Image (tube, rainbow, N blue to C red):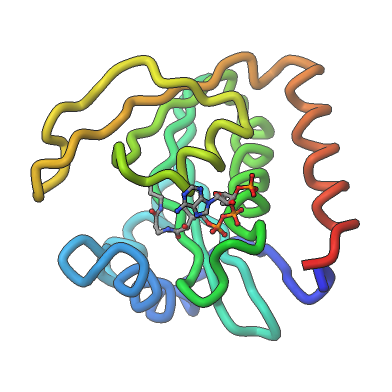
Length: 171
Ligand SMILES: CC(C)(COP(=O)(O)OP(=O)(O)OC[C@H]1O[C@@H](n2cnc3c(N)ncnc32)[C@H](O)[C@@H]1OP(=O)(O)O)[C@@H](O)C(=O)NCCC(=O)NCCS
């Protein structure tokens, strides 16, 4: 049931488990170590959230906001929790957070083959605006994606409705 999940700001007590989960989602070679998360939590422009299920961390994500520009720094849901809408829920909360901090548009890079992530981003108006060739260590290209007009009433209502509707659905 949707009500069993909660999304809260990331705190230093979370980072050990967040880093472990990051390794499960992105692979040990690509994960951010504990220190990186602790550094991120100190940055005034960085905003991190965790998804909890019965006090257990099952996902995390972050967004940087520089004036009206947002950049998604990371997002992941534990492998056994993927495909239930939690990635979209977490992403909606990151977008909401970024809007509250003044973001009007956002960019991100995503692996060309990462269909699940691309689908989540497209829900929030992201469109491909270019490529970052051989962006990843294994040589895969990244799609550069952008979403705009986040400060508009239309976009804010869309995000609010998305969150309201999410909580009404059975998971
Ligand atoms: C990307 C990620 C956060 C998505 O989380 P999630 O909880 O699985 O996402 P959701 O369940 O909200 O939605 C995923 C969407 O992609 C779809 N999807 C899932 N796997 C898919 C696949 N292999 N191919 C195409 N679509 C897929 C789902 O059907 C869903 O679409 P829908 O809502 O229209 O049905 C998660 O897969 C993840 O942590 N991946 C590893 C880390 C990562 O790649 N992060 C993004 C880096 S840019």
